[in-house]
Amino acid sequence: MAANQIAAANLADPPPFPPGPMIRIQDVSVQYGSSGTLKKILSGINLDIRPGEFVAVVGQTGCGKSTLLRLVLAEEMPGSGQVLVEGVVRIQPDRHCGYVPQKYSLFPDRTVLENITFGPEVTEIGWLGGLLPSRRARRREFQAEALGYLRRMGLRESDAAKYPQQLSGGMQQRVAIAQALIMRPRILLMDEAFSALDPGTRIGMQRLIKALWRETGSTILFVTHNPREAVILATRVIALGRPENSEEGAAVVLDITVPDTIDERMADALIRRVEESAYPHGFREGDAASAEV
Amino acid sequence: MSVLRIHPQPGRGTVSALSWFLFGAGAIAYFWVSGNRHRDNPDDRVMPTLSQMGQAFANAALKPAEDDEAAGADRRPISARLVRSMLWQDTLATGRRFLISLGLLFPAVLLGLHMGMFPYAGAFFLRFVLFFDKIVALSLLPILFIAFGIDELAKVMLIAIGVAPTIILDAFNLTRGVPREQIVKGFTLGAGDFSVTYRIVLKQIRPRVLNSIRLNLKAVMLFLFAGEMIASTDGLAYRIALLRRHMGMDTIIPYVLWVALLLFLVDLSIRLLNRKLHPWFQEA
Image (tube, rainbow over all chains, first blue to last red; front, top):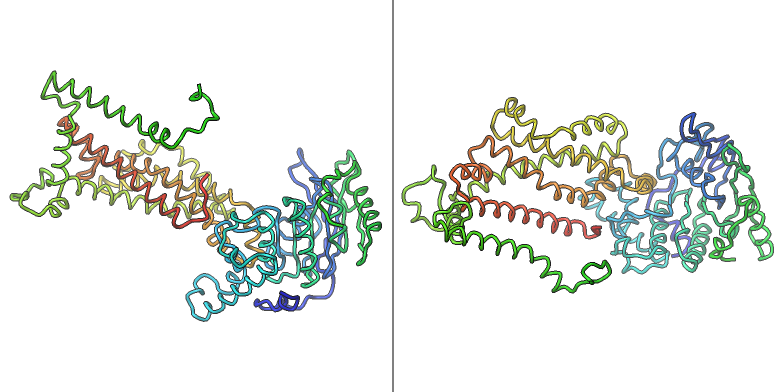
């Protein structure tokens, strides 16, 4: 499927985006626990993410990368400060953001096709709408579109009738991306979406997501612990970290733009910079081995 | 010795033979002791022989209860005799109560689901259900009989009070066990709160809830039997209690086996239904 076909999705176009950043994170702090056991996760985060940016967030385990993503998703509320998505403070996750988690990304009780069409059906057809002939026709349209996405993700039509547990991890993540993209979200949030994949599959998925980003022009917030993956994929890399022995939460320690065209030497230099900022005690090379340069 | 090791994989034949061994041994032991007792005392009523039990079961299955006996009943066709028989009437009475009780468990599942999904509902009900779960249901029997009389309602209420808290808590825990990612995913795909609850979470917990109900069938039957034995004029447990007064072991034992068979069939039906309705579900 070509770029124009992705854009020709069946769902109604979202309203035009208001001017300003797509995501604005203003002086956000997050802490868990009560006064005795207070644990600060994030401190004073300020970020503006513009429409169409591909932003990778890197940092050590437990530095608050996923918390940051949950804040954007409105799955979690900040202790102080505010998060604006498309200019609005959201109070719970909604269809403005597509979401691809590392695990449990598909509904196990639905086939691949049903997983992909779930969003359009729940949005347009509703509870008993499937009984109406006009809606049944609409359902067939969604199914045809879902099959198109399936092919675009490199899966066969025969996979459509399979249940998620009958697919490999890589295939499941491809379906999860199709499931999110069919809703045409302007923001796609990916939380370590490729972490559980083997190196070969991971490289294939990286190519796919980069191509889809170019086709759809979505804003992508991509959480990863892998600096190499971040530099290779993203147009902007944000590293979170906290000073040693500090009680403070993590803050943005690096915010760099990755040039459109990048050679191997420049990529290595950027990766080293990200590693030094996000992993001051050293980054295990094995973690980066599966990223493609 | 390989039988004391955890690594060996016994063959299918061995597994089958081992699994039936205790049944066979139990039956042989029973009939051996029964035979000895009958040689010593031909009128022994404690351990009836196979033929005595067969005769008693045939009577129960083909003859009406003694208080319902009508002249000329033996001349009726076998199907009519079966329908009017003591066994069938008792099974029907117990089955009706059993199905009503199972039906009452569905609101319990929905309550558990909502408690797990909606924090305010959870806060409102959880402590109360946890408290109720700790009450020994049988200790409530006198209260139920005083409050609801000795009719059907008291027996059904006994089952509801005895089993519903367990099912509510099971459904609650299963709901809470659905990965948060699934719920968030549902919202991001445009589902509202109730769509997420019914179309994502309920669908996912349904096979496990059915399993939970299946595992609680014995508890349902236990409370039903307690109610029937104390205050009833029909039903399988009523009959067993009645026959106990006359030392009717030749009927009691087949009745007990009949109840076990029925429960096994209900259990099997639910398992098959579960497999049919939820082909994606893989039991652990």
